[in-house]
Amino acid sequence: METRIVTLTTDFGSTDHFVGTMRGVILSGNPKAQVVDICNSVTSFDVLDGALTIAHAYRYFPPGTIHLVVVDPGVGSARRPLLVTTSRHFFIAPDNGVLSLVLEQEERVLARHITAEHYFLQPVSTTFHGRDIFAACAGWLSKGLEPDKFGDEITDYVRFSLPKPKMVAERTLKGAVLKVDKFGNLITNLTPENAAALFAANSGLKLTVGQATVTGFQSSYSQGQPGELFGVLNSMGFLEIACNRGAAAHLAKAGRGAEVLVEF
Image: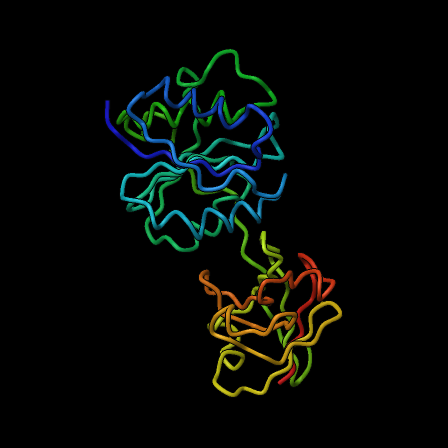
């Protein structure tokens, strides 16, 4: 048996047995596995939130890490279980788009439909594939089993792209809030790649989100004044609307999906 890292990204939370049970299945398959939680507080049923979470964490793990991603509103349906191999990592997840942003970043991708049912726990529950299929297969993979043992290669897996900002008037760009984090920061889909002028020094731009107008842009949270909304380029490469020691979402009265208008 090998010592392999297996990460967990789920929407199961911490108040039920689900995550602990999955850990037990992995370790029963390979007692030498090292199981690491990335996040078990993905918004329930929210595939986009899961996709953002894993896409901005996986690359910081060593080569050979197995990433188990279970945000699965279609559990028990005909959606397929996937094993995805990239140049440095493995991913086991439902085929519902939760790996879309990982696949967007990787040049070499090979996806397999997991069909080898003899690696599943039996009987397979229709409500807990995280335990009976995904965790069980992660345990076997962590022992060094070759990916081709799990099923055939496919290319028609589900993918989606993040919504892109677009010009809605001659001098107005419209973006959106992708996520509200634990601190109440509004994470938008605006980046230096799609809204370069927004990040230019002394740009003089005005940004509107919810009931708030933002004209200040800082390089860190501590530079903002208490109670002041400001923009900052966050660690994921997105424009974030933040407040020093406050919740921007509350102050702006805005949440996920809210329009973000940038006036040049």
